Image (cartoon, rainbow, N blue to C red; front, side, top):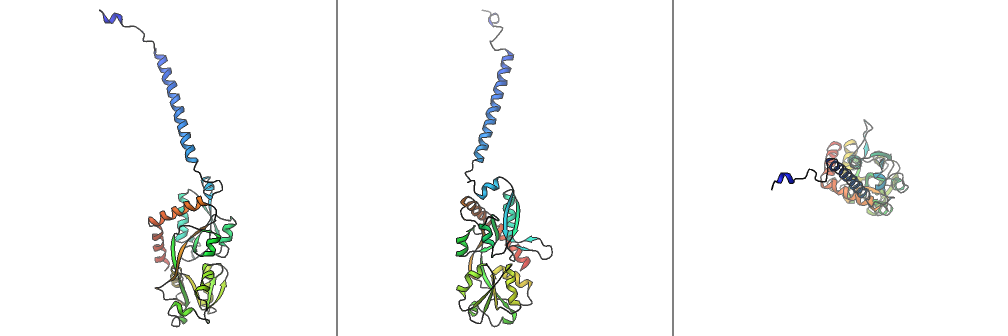
Length: 290
C-alpha cells in the first residue's frame, strides 16, 4: 500500500482558525489574569480595619497628627537651631516613614495633652508620658517603649542637706512640679510631709523655682535630670544620682476605643525595641545631652 497516496491534504483545522483560537485563548487568559489581580487587590484592601479607626484614615493617605510636649532627651527644641529633636521625636518620624505618611506636629503642654487627645486634636501624644492610673483611665498607653525612674534635683547649696530621697519627706521641703505632669499626681503620696507648688508651661519651667530658691526640689525622669544638670551645672544637683526611685513605664498615649490602632502600635513598639532602635537612640542622646 502507498501510504503517501492516502495522506489527506487537510486536517480540518486551517491556519487562520488556529491563530484565531490562540488569540481568543490569549484574551481569555489576560481577562482571567486581570480578574485574579483584582481579586488579590480586593483581598488586600479588605483588611477588616474599622472605618472609625485611625488606621483606616492612615490607609487613605495624609498626615499623622502628633501632639508633643517638651522634655529633655525625649522631645525638645534645640536651643540653637529651633529644630525638634529627641528619642521619641525620631521614633515618631520612623513610625510615619513606615506608614508612608507625613507628620502634623502640634505642641501642647502636659497639662492639656490628654484633653487635646480626647478632643481629637491629634491621634498620638508622642512625648515622654509616665504611667499613672489617672492617665490610664483617661487615655490608652502604647507599648511601652521605655521605662523611667525619677530623680530629685535640688540647689547645690542644699547638696549636703539632702543625701537620700527620704531626707526630702519633710514639712520644710517644697517641691516644684509641672502642672499636669505625672509628678503632680504621684509625688504627694510619696512625700506626704512635704509641700507642693505647680508651675504652668513646659515641664522644664518647674526647675526655675529651685534655681531661685523659691522651692526646695524638682522631680523629673532620671535621664531628663542628667540632661538638665549638664545644662545647669552652676546650680543643679541630683540627690542620690545612682538610685532613681518610683520606676514606671514611659511611652506614648492614644485615645481609648480604637483597638486596631492600639494593637498596631503595640506590635510596632515591640519591633523597634527588639531590633535595638530605641536603645540606640537613647544611648545617642544621653551621650550628647548628659
